[in-house]
Length: 532
Image 1 (cartoon, helix red, strand yellow):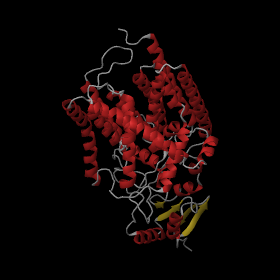
Image 2 (cartoon, helix red, strand yellow; image 1 turned 45 degrees about the vertical axis):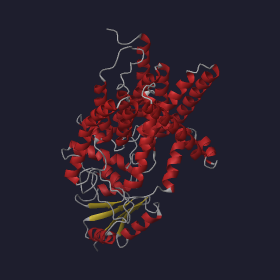
Image 3 (tube, helix red, strand yellow; image 1 turned 90 degrees about the vertical axis):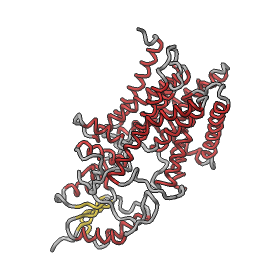
Image 4 (cartoon, one colour; image 1 turned 180 degrees about the vertical axis):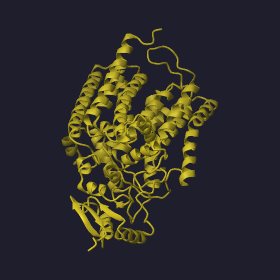
């Protein structure tokens, strides 16, 4: 039985080559491993804890409490890889390389299914593979690549709910309920990778309500979808309630967005839209340029989504909007709403960094290709010429930007993967401390990674998550001093003098009255005074 025509087989081979190329370039770019942040080390330590049989715990901290702040998806996959004997720190590199290729492949299938055009599918896969921002998102040991994978898979299965034919194959997909169940499970997996997966859940529920033509279909399909996803969500919530007496380690406290956070978001978005640094610096000088650009894009997208959704809802007999483009447009607003609500109500430490914005970038690429295909269908020679030129221009600039990033990345690791950390004299000093010595530090992640010792967090004036003052700060400082002066603990302060003023004032208080036993490159370690 022949499943694919010759052209379809060639297309799939091309997608496979793009995926292999993307994965290979990421492996080449990270000879010292993926970039590492505090969250990265949390995921890796959680995976090691699972492998050791202790469950999903905060192994990088001396308290070793159960992890609830991060869902278990990424760490669980790393632990699964670890069964082969590969440490999760190394396994993350191969996992993200595989995911980078897999996500490029899924986007190629998405573009093909969305437009019925193999050229559009290949273009979408290439746009993703050569985009520096999305490459960077996969070059760090974080959960976003896995989250994007589950999200893309969920969008594809959801597109089968309406029994659309596979492009050019002519055969119908299986019963829509099968696709609904698959979508529900994949959505749950996305949630278990990042809590932002709730936006995916809301997107598909709203799409089911808007796109079905009767309330019976709407309610039935919504019930099937929810029933498929809910057991996983409830199961994780029950686990957290039992082991830690909270569902997701979030507290409802209002804290407005800061100007610094907004500026971070604008800068990262400008990197996505303007690949070349020199151009970006010139354009940033134009007052409010990027704000205006984002406002125009958001408004146009909102009008399109609302028009398409309400037209189908109010006039069920009208044609169905294209599923993949419509749901991705809907998802952008749902995802951003979840991020804004998280920042303002649940977690003040969340910032508009690349990892947070990367799912939006993927959706924007999908919509960009759909817009190009729509314009191509107008059959105007001028518009088609402009589309070809625009595609070549974007691909060329993106590839150039990514090649520079690859060259830079190949020379050394990012974040805590840098030689500045693994060759640190302070880390060497901590590694040689007597077994059982307690370590208080402002960098518990890298201390755990490079000394194989869990540590204690420092007393702080403000809770980074809630934005509220911490209680018993003075008592915490006093307890730390007593522990260090007893000879059973040390205080390790990294980047001393280069932190923000409020953090630096805390460090000065903590170090007051202690003996400076080690001081290199602004890394200071305090101990009890030597015995005479």
